[in-house]
Image (cartoon, rainbow, N blue to C red; front, side):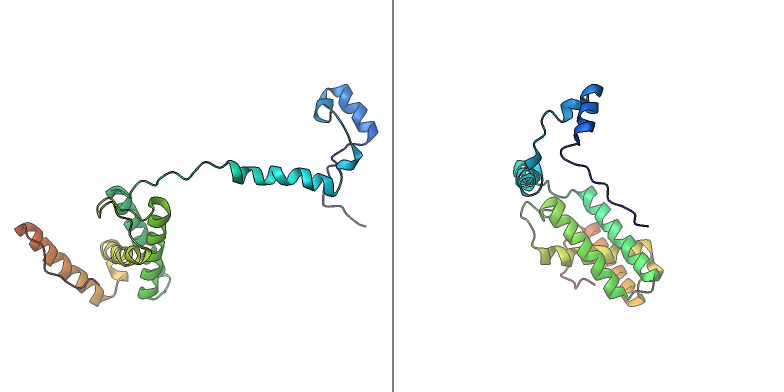
Length: 179
């Protein structure tokens, strides 16, 4: 036994259905029925309708810079991704790289690479990746320190102490290597 799984809706209903449609008031849906609307001509008539949404789309609005709240959210999401990946047994470097790339792509896509805290200049994707990886590491140390290797945790804590001491003294910290 053969089953017809596709439902075919004809463009032009059969004559018996047309009279029934007119009697029910739905004849307005088929005010005319031309048999040559089948096949290629129908495809030619439908093609502009398919392309119309692409032509009518509004211009892309200028993306707003990422605010401090946005950056906090993205950092937390990246850190949680690192924690989840580490608990699943993925290497720390891979987990951080994936989380950093995710954050960088979101900032690039949603905000055009502009971060309010950094300035009005759009950052390159490479600059976004470096900063995003650092943010993911810092967040992971805060959220799930057991999933972060001990040497990375030590580097981050030392860096935070140096920055905290410099911030309390009101001076800029000396250039230090980020983890």
